Image 1 (cartoon, rainbow, N blue to C red):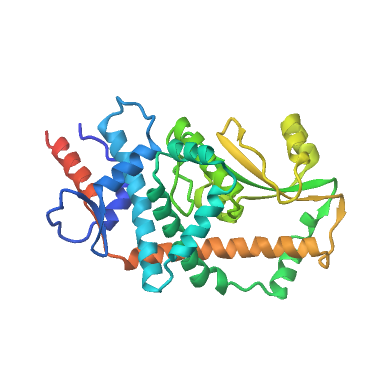
Image 2: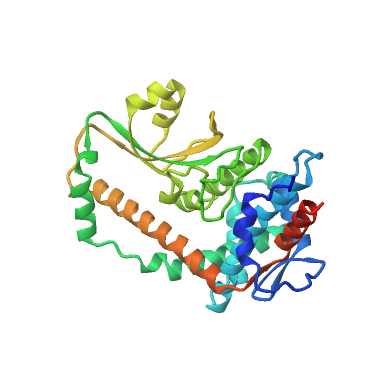
Length: 343
């Protein structure tokens, strides 16, 4: 019987260009003729799957590497766009961000963070430069061009007026979820999904550290959250009655109610995986008028997040279509599958 091919492979096959040519032995993929080396793919694999089962079969390992490589290809496409537009982060940007990341920790604590993530100082600064450059790209090409008009706000309020009439005190929450089992329905911006419990723990710890360093909750949710219902909206869960929190978990309610607006919770272990919650606001019972500044802010943030997520997703698709990508690793997997099916 023919061996099954991982589902992710069918997506990656779209990036194999025309007639196959001999793959360089050390190159996993090329993006506009710029190589992504197997050494870098293997490094990312070890970072993400350092505690994976050493007896894992070849198909599972290939599937994990294909998923990682897809994310690396997407990042390289965006980085090249930032480079072309002169938006690459300069050394002073990188050093400022590095200092910001390091500030909450002692030297020893910071080194432990680095060791836990299995990265070097140089690796971190390279990643900072890439992240800052892509953030500049998104801000210039997408976020800065989004306009929310008073008419948009009024229209949203009128269409959702009932949701601003609170029968009891409510809390406005946002969430980031990381699960130990990858869900094919998850579509975050980075196509980033934990594959097991160990990776899920390390991923949520990474997100928690970035939040403590001042990174934007909504952007991290869009990029990394594995909650298919809230990730597209920056993690926004909307308004939740206080009684619903208590019915779900009394301790959870106590923890949420102890937060101040704008604060985030510690990592919470749940049946689904690991969550971080952000308290956006606390709202007393009653009808909220359109002229309430909190209503205005909530609506504007909701509309901005929706437009931002939609346009970023579309921007990724257009950029992928315009890039010339050759995925040599995907070709190898296909060739091995064909050889196996012919036996």
